[in-house]
Length: 319
Image (cartoon, rainbow, N blue to C red):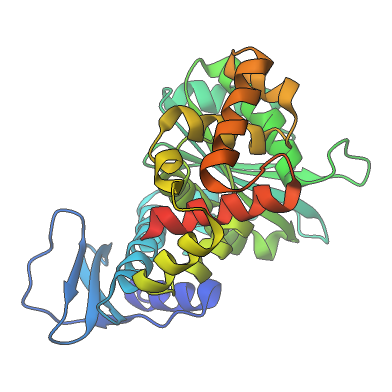
């Protein structure tokens, strides 16, 4: 299969998005994405069959640009896998066959995309030591490592997200570098691994953009972002103003208050855990939560209002 066709088919398979290869007179811009309002399309470029190839997404608005950026990230990962001799990398990129040494069966896998600024050798050494022979590990380029952990029935972890928390702590300690993890979820069998790795990588890309204070990003939350991205800027503004009181910008533009809110939510609304991880006294955190409630009208000690605040913050960042 030609790589150009593989890219369009794989993007459609994982997202339902139809992209087409495009002939264009435009030169590729530095970020690889360009809006053509006259043709009402958004173009993105990716290496394909040995050269940079343009692809088109319908629409020329901000939501189409977001979609094009995500599609380009995925297309780049496909191209990287094809160019690399690692069969696991090619398989997980969606451009290669299942490696012969991988056991086929009805096994579940936790699937992660891990980004770190540590040397690649440090990461490969870590996984060589701790991973099971049934796990799949591959260096995917751009500082990203794929890790597919076989989930045994007697596992101590209730979810891929719970395992990711422990993995992040252990990795950070061992490799002495920053670690961010995209969680794709649970793949039911090896045939689903490429699809779930694409989910994990998408979560990593979107999480780093919309939630830079966190280190673990779930694809399920990215699905919410993808849905919200279809809203117009006016609808986004209306939603934020409806959910939050008029002084909300004072909170959303205050790094100290936002760190308090995000850390508090991250640690399941537990004041003791959040304050300990922020290295502040619990009374300091309580004061900041009180200030957030006064300015936004939301008491994020309450689960429902914490979730309303969380979604409103995402929408605000996407405006």
